[in-house]
Length: 263
Ligand code: PEP
Ligand code: MN
Image (cartoon, rainbow, N blue to C red; front, top):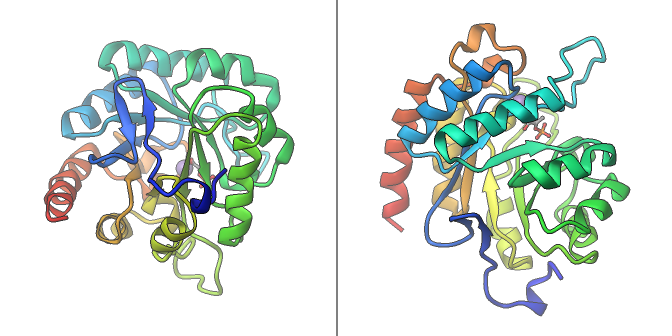
């Protein structure tokens, strides 16, 4: 159960040699989309050196327009594995369809359920039948309770390895892509024992907003961060405006780890 009533201690999710929810911040970094083997391996090396402990990269992309790039699909998964082989970084990537669940179980370390699929109950039940840790992003306009009920769908099938991710919610404000709801951290920690991380990249939608979002997440007590990093943001195939360069990411990591050590 996701409710803290049934589990007073914080849950620590183990992913290979790494954890999320323990002492150390879990830092997930990488491009929005996997674009080539060379790109994903190059970024993986850079983010690892800067202090990331997980590699992200979308192979199946939930794009608003069907005419936008939809991801390299299984070829993208293979490229993520090549990057893992080079760097050792565990892979976090989004699953959109139950059709690919066996491939994900075999080759992915953390299955991401995107904001748009937070209430795809069939998908939630199927990932619940696996043992693979799941990163459950908050829906675009989901309440805390709806979000936790989605976690419950996964857990009720037997998979208790759920990590929540606040990625901004829709509000009346058009200046930013979404509004980062920093209160999600203390509220989720009150209601649930599950770890929660912050994704300031999708929340703000612009790279200049990432640092403030990341820092506030750490100060609020989040268990980690998800940050989009691209070698050439201007030419990224998706979400370039919100990506940090590897150098900017390294700068952010220095600040983040200083803040985390204050706790
Ligand atoms: C992503 O992580 O690339 C993504 C599409 O995120 P979200 O589901 O939060 O929009
Ligand atoms: Mn993205």
